[in-house]
Length: 167
Image 1 (cartoon, rainbow, N blue to C red):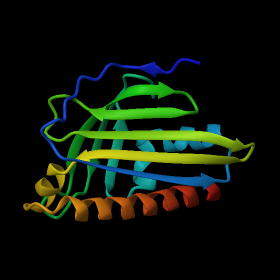
Image 2 (image 1 turned 90 degrees about the vertical axis):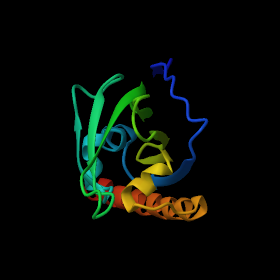
Image 3 (image 1 turned 30 degrees about the vertical axis):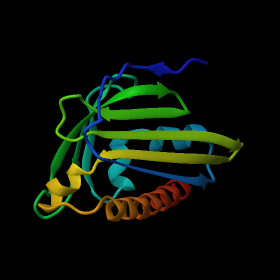
């Protein structure tokens, strides 16, 4: 099966990106996991910094998302607009900021069937370290931001697992 994909021309050669990935097993069918996890309108139920995330259309390739998040007291309702640039039902959804966005963000959400009722979730997030400076008003070393991002993604996946298995 061919993956639906949009071409992205985003160039990040002059910016520092933080990349973090987490994987967890969930005791639910892959279809149910994908429907919840891949859809950003559910993010506020498992990602603590999300105030609200709205799909501007049907959940499919090309849909845009308006995500409002609490970054800090200085930036309590930051808007990031993303587009679904790759989509394969029950397997993969990738969202990216537009080329003219102030900060680059790429969110990859992947699910894989392990057995009938066990699904592997892999969540990868790439973001411009400048977003942290924007939120705090000062820069932090990349290794500190990476450590925090790695810690957060583990917590998010645990919250996601709990939410999915208890619903």
